[in-house]
Image (cartoon, rainbow, N blue to C red; front, side):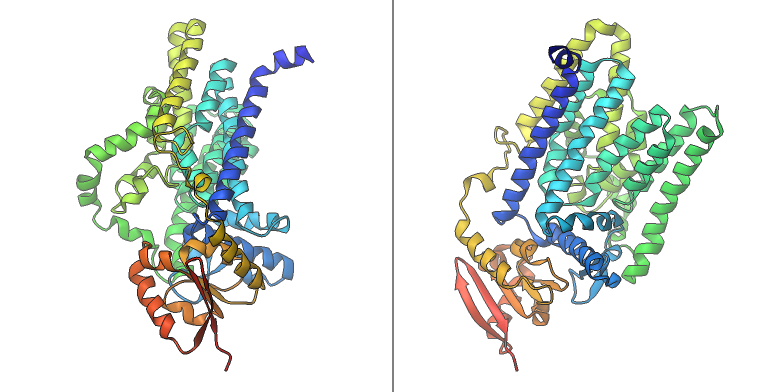
Length: 475
């Protein structure tokens, strides 16, 4: 036993770290949801999409696959009218275990955590040093932009981080079928992922001289699949389901002016510094991998929607794997310079950098920007009210409208209307008064609430702890 522990000490430490990450972020994400810090945008939207697909499998009504109620209207639409993240359909079988947002939050955490294994394997393969490989895996799990994305609701594109890392690892190993499998999985997480993966195809074509036919064909397959899927998604699939162009194309109407206005400023330098800093700036020693991620950088930095460059959300998910791969290749250059004598010092620098930026920016309890509201504020009274109505309105065919803040609790049904004038289509309306009057959609929710109070079609049936419930009158 002792011999086994000594021989496998790095792998054991790695899996302890992965398990600790899964335990904390799964628990925290669920606590955040149950303490009413999650919202309809986007946990509720994702839950309804996966729930309807689950019901399609369960009932045989295939019209419900990837279906949800339009967040900006009252009609039923397909998820592809918003984003082409069809991997959501593959999550539906997990709803047979538990059909609710908790399932999505746990899956997201597990998938992200497993990326540390891929980072470890890539580093081990390239650096031939288990200690440095473990340091990179630790840095991955402590990478604060990923942690922020992990706790910010649920988004399928976060899976692209892990899938891309495994795609690259299996490409390095020459196991091309597995590499293409993870490529396909990554492509299904969001429409623009293929733009970056196509750049990897170009890189693969130049890096691996074609000794075998499959090695010659693989880069071409990667490029065609990646760019073909991305372009088809943006210009064919989404417009076909949406009835108009992709909503995000408006972010780039003035691309040249956006470049001048948003790219060349201190905010961009700050954005790049906090992406690279946790990796001790090592990706700068292998800039080719930053270039591979350039399409996603361009999407974020050239957009008039400044949220895309925020490190609070999920917009780094496609960039992150290439920064870690670049850091590993940068570390290889450092180790080639001084060899084994530098490996311990390099590991210490990587760990120190990850801990420093974790202290400065992470959501963990010791951080200067910690996110611990769900841990310290008691919202049990509100939760009990919401839970009471969640159980009372559990039937799939009851149409519900609710405030954003409690939307995830009521989206396990076919028809759900986020609170607005569209509440009129619901059988029950549940309103958080604080959310209606002070939420970021208050210009919509305040008039809707005033209208609801005077609406003769609805009667108030409950009101406690800052929540009001209205039921449509039966004629």
